[in-house]
Length: 311
Image: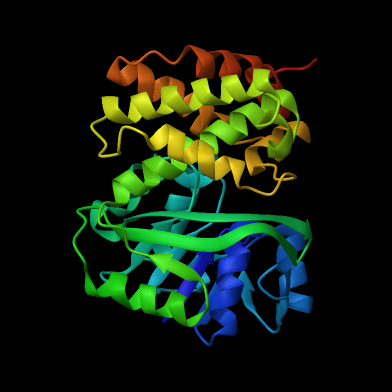
């Protein structure tokens, strides 16, 4: 398959690198120092699943020079999706599938508003990785995993082709019976650890252990699960408890990407994660007081990182 990775950071770069290594035709859309490193040195990945290097790579900052591809893996930050969708139009033809891998649940609708609903799949991924240096990705935890599917949950030929390509790359992949439910489950997980992690400044092993922060974590999980029910998402009643057990099994030093961004003074996915919980709760009439407190507490830092506040 001919596949474009739009946003070749820690997530898109890892999965795209695995696909390129397996023989798929990959084009990486990147920018700045990272792009220059990809073009001159290739892509280096240090991974718990085995280190590898892809060199040479096809990489550009101009999607119009790439042309139509079979699939687009969208690896930009959630707040960058609307702008990225505009640039992706050069990559999308009649049979192209666009797979958002963002945290949160807003990306499919945002992309569909620009490219049309027929181009878009629902999607999610799980991996703990970060960009250690230009052209260099470090995978530090969580078995890499991708799930995607048609928004109507029908099993299409393009979904099966992409699934086969990802399996060939040695990455665990799934086509859930209900992709919306799968995305919401990931949303409950990531928004909870991101919010608690950012407000405490502590890794997961600390805030899940202390009784006080563990109780706040439980409240956050329960609120987001209630919001999912308010939006008629088909998740079991005990989903918050199951996700808490998953968090208890994570490496103690794990820090979510939103947490890292906020702690390091960069624009983050606060609005697409904790902020989205508050917004979606208001839309469905579900109270989210704990998430609202976390969002309000982190908002000044977010606005400062975006240049909208100076203090």
